[in-house]
Length: 203
Image 1 (cartoon, rainbow, N blue to C red):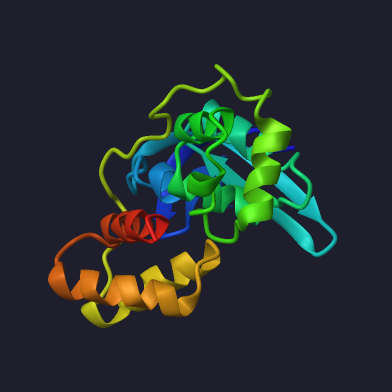
Image 2: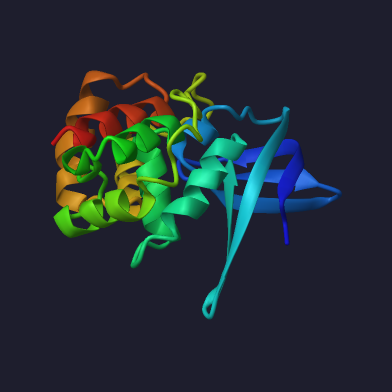
């Protein structure tokens, strides 16, 4: 099992990064807050979780232990898989999510893409007593973007694709992304992605 990666960052995308360790490049999926802590060409340490399914293996990376722990706890909820757990951590940090769960704020939890009323209520019911005091508010906070820049014509498509991967519909993603790109053409794609996530989570 791959528990963590320690090495130079070889590349960064909007939903993944590659870290070189011992001559091998490990590609892992990650949320925008985690990716924002990485800088191409610099050393990085990330904790990981390897999810093995019948159709293959997927490596997920996290900036801190709190984020990985929440990732695992979310998947103990009936019907909640790794993709939805990552979507939750893309919208809320582990501390913020723990507060929402412990306070029973199912309505706010429903802003996570792919989480409906029943799933939100299930998350609260099954995790309420398991997350109290475990996570600090603000864990996995952003520290500046480092994702590679793209041409103006490709920025929107990259961001929309990343949002669709997190569970948002293409239509809702485009409605938010295209105006953002038009208004801020020189802004780094990862910053635009985080802004889009904030906007979409309020809807």
